[in-house]
Image 1: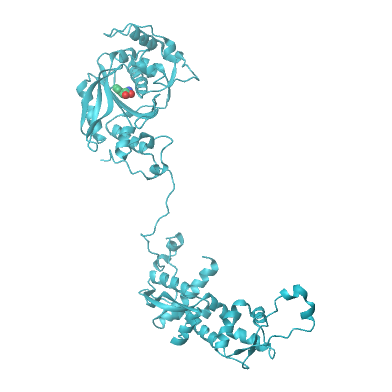
Image 2: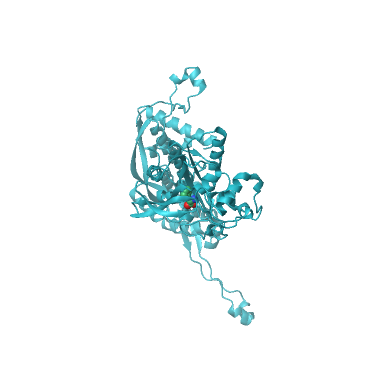
Length: 538
Ligand code: PHE
């Protein structure tokens, strides 16, 4: 609203409130036309009434009615101050005594007014038409004209319009003016004006307005904020406060939104932390084959170490093996080649160059192997082993062909517990507890194989929606061939399990194509509107 419109609205409100204070305003339409001189129309008045009644200053009852309004054409005549018939009469009258032909009349008052006005003026007998005789052709024209003249059509003489009286009363205009003022016109006149399409009947609503419970002659500005000024000067005791409109629509916030994967990840974190696990640093997307494979007793010819399954870096292609502890490196080589700690090893020629190859880590177990080496180091420093629990949730990469359940880039979540004399029962119990916390109460295990765990078990969970058992993770007890070279003693056992973050997220959020969850095909709207993750909230 402009400043001017605002002042206008205030003026309308004041006029209305004054009238209401003197008695009920029965019809807003009549009230508006009575005050038309004050510059407001019915629409302005209606918005003032609505706003005042919302604030309780007035009560308003809405009624439906029919009003007679002027058509566009009639509005024109009212503003010209003359009906078409009166315009025709005036033009003809002025041209007396000779009168006007139709074309001359059209030139004077315009085609439309001439047409309508002439018809009406004739009916009212204000004008008449003088039929003229054919003008006689002039001497000589007939003979000398030749062929060309014979073809020429003789101009038809136009009849002359003459005024039949001295002056007229513009009854039509008077009627239109009364309609404009909202006054009643007689049924016969109304019918006639309607036929001439000068008036139309419209349905409209009007208000009956009376004093409201908070009636006042002036609307009090309601305070919307409790300001310092209101408080320090005790003004807040006398000021009226605007009520909260709890039904008002709030503007949509366009802030950041959490992706479902992030929501599930943060719940997984909470579950792990509540179970006493610490998070491992997962910031190395680029890893050496050494920590990703060799440290895990994964032989160098293992198919997973093929370029078909793993992304190898070309720049830098190799890690600097000087950064790895030389004695540990030697023990790793030895366990691969010759075995030890009760193992036969693989009996092949272990190559440092193969271990140095940089890759994108294929699993978060690379994070675990680095961590467990640190655990062994700590034990060495402190002279005693302290049991520990660790977890990680982060991204891993595999050279997979992408389909509805596989991506080349996804997230893994991994947990491990290191303590003396842990056994399979501990692993089963820990996994059962963890999975029940993420909402998978029914789990089953199936023997499996991993180069770094013995025994190894795949984890299956029952999906009530699909009515079937789904593979949800992999687990095992880390082999001595992995732990002993690090320096961990024989009785320290490490149980571990891993699962993808995408699988449970898809189940929780009802996404059945992984490409709709992660990657360039994701619908941004899904990210904006996805609900809270409700696992692990209890
Ligand atoms: N690294 C395994 C995988 O990628 C998961 C796993 C973690 C298995 C820990 C056993 C122990 O599937």
